[in-house]
Length: 372
Image (cartoon, rainbow, N blue to C red; front, side, top):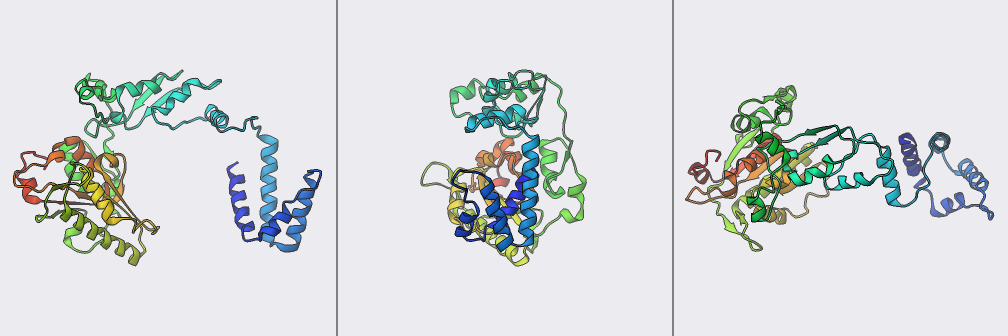
């Protein structure tokens, strides 16, 4: 089936340059609706006006379609829901969210599920995990996650106090259920992984061979300030509250981030190297300000992408270069969200080749929080 789809796409590209009138003539049926006229017109069309390449593509398409017609029996369904149910019933592996897995409870004639794998399990609320866990036939469940990354988001203070945001992963961990640590990381350059491994993972994680190789080190911008792991001191910054909400922002850091992104874009265009850049901040106000400043200037260039998100929005993601804007700049040493171990862990472990942290050194150094 996959081969047939590829051949049809290829055939479509060959036919596409032809005129609309030629195609109308090609696909015109006889008055009685017989298909023979279609093939006769097609043969005439091929003989008169197309290349050998198109002839060969046509022959291969017909051969693949005939094989499918002879060996693949399709159900007599036409609406979207029926087609979806047919595909799900016959699939060997199904990827879905916890909430959407509820549909799997009501599939007629569906085979029971032997294995359930829950990714980002530490972010899934305990009540939500019950939806896939009750699927018929599940004999084994594998929960993949880490309790020192971001938990599920609970907006209600009452629900938070009642621990409704707790995950099944966290509950099992607190009860002493045995865990298996994946102790090799294949994402971060060793210069980036050193701090989080020692601070969050008790030095139990080692670097994979791929990140230890010399080719894994990248220096997209010249100068010692842009190494694999760099702190860029923005001491002139000033934190303030945004226009739309009480979330903090730092206009000087916004300007600094914008300038760095501009330089990275120019370097990508000049060298022809693809670059995927992520800009991360713990404050939505700063995220919004950077997004507005960058606009859509880089959306049309295929070799360069830049994503601006909050720390919460970046969990599970990775980019070649991460620019982290700390925002906080004050004389009291108040670092706000940066004092949260889970949030800091996520922010500092998204980069593959370069992690550049922008912040006020005096504010961070005077903080009572040891992570800052």
